[in-house]
Every structure is written in structure tokens, then in C-alpha cells.
Length: 307
Image (cartoon, rainbow, N blue to C red; front, top):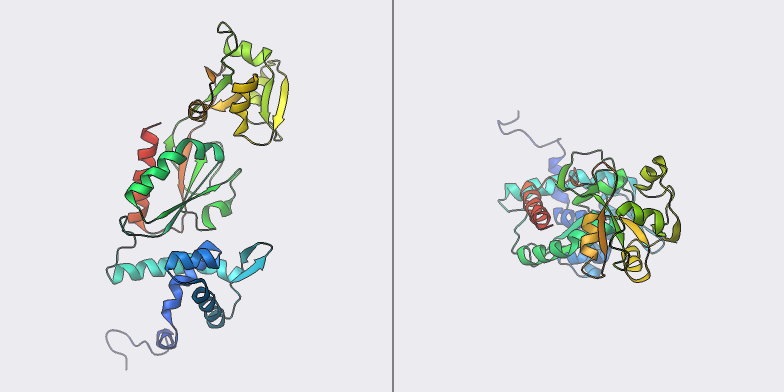
């Protein structure tokens, strides 16, 4: 007959006595980092010890877990299924034994934020400084993205995605800061020339994408004549070339303001009404450490208040 507390015999829990549960923490690190080296650094193991742990995990689970592919690794379907439940179990275990899952002064985790290169140019410097001050033993990893996919939010250990309001998200979002489109030109242009004059008389330097980046469709719809003088694949070169070689370009205001500290730019308001270009915060839905979420959220909004 079972006791009031329940009989673990036959429940599967009795079989845990033959399992080394110490493997679960490095297993989660490996699945999130997708790198034996980075996972070893994250949990404080040597690389040979991490490789040995991986071999034991593979035997325990009867699955390869990670497979070499070119210069990197990819996760097996079984490994992908393990990430969310494994993270939830370990965080719940930390609470049970009264271990805070995130202690800013001592935590050595890798904090991963995904964003476009342009957003990184705006928020990256202050975000780096604040995390270094408030979590001095943590590592900030910035993953630059172009067009986010559903996997962006849930794979490769991403904690939070900073997303333009023009991109959709399958998860809830919160506005971090507002932005707008502006016209940037060389300071050598005539001060009497309006933004519309600049757009119609100066050669445009444009990021080489198809379709052309917003808000060029607005100019096309309004029949505004313009000439593309240069196509370039690297966004960060656009304001530098405008400042040094002349021409005109369309940028987000916050990006242009940050760039103006490196190159002399003339900034004018876009001459037609446009929808917003705000940047939103979208959290990885697998992230359940509420204390860490609130801490990082406060850091991000501290960054935004200084824009």
C-alpha cells in the first residue's frame, strides 16, 4: 500500500538513482551554446571534461545531441525538444534548494541579445557599459540579425530580441524606444536646400536589397524622382560615405545621431508622413527566470532613457 507522500516505485523516479544528475547543467549549456568550448566556459569545466560529459550524456540519452556541420554544430531533433523542459527543471530546482538563479554581482552567464546591426550601433555601447557595471562577471553576447525568424527567438541561447516594429513576432512585445526616418546628407550641401530638394537632386547611397529598404516605396508612390548613385551591402558604410563623398541617404534618426559622432552629417526630417520605426523588446518564451528578466529589462530601459 502506498504512503501519504506517494510511492515512487514504478513512477520512474526510482530509476534516477542510477543517473548522474550533475550532467544536466552542462547538458543545458551545451544545447544553448551549441559549442563544447563555450559550454565548458559557462559551467566552469575544462574542454576535455566537457567532451567527456558529452560522451556520457549521449550514452544516457541514446542520442548524438550535437552533430558537426561544417565549422559549427547543429542540434538533433531530440536535443531541440530537450531545451525548454530542461531549462524549466533546472530553474525550478534552483528555487527548491533556495539558490537564486541570477545574482548580478557573481553570475557568470552569457547574456545574449539579438538585434540588427543598426540597433546595435544605437544601444550597444551603453548596454555594454551597464552590464559590465551591474553584472561584472557576466558576458554580453550580441547576435546581429537581418530578418528575424521564429527560430531567432528560441534557439542559440537568445534571451531577448530587439525588434523593429515593422517585423512580426509570434510572441508578446513591448516598446523600448521610438524612432523615425530622416534624410542624411553631406554638410557641404546648400543650407537652403530642403529635405525634398536633397532627395531629388543628390545621388542616393542605398543598401543593396530587394525590395529596396523602407521608406523608398513611399517616394515611389508619391512619384518623387530620385537617382541611385551607389548600392552598397554594408549598412554601416552608408553615413560615412555620405559625409565624406557627398550624396544623400535615408536612415533611422537614432542611427544617424549615433553616426554623427563619427562623421559630420546633415540630418533633416523626412518630408512625408510615415508610420513609426520603433524598436520593441521580445523575450525568449523559454526564459522562465523572472528575476533575470526583470533585471535585464531594467538595464535595457535604462539604455533607452538616454537616447
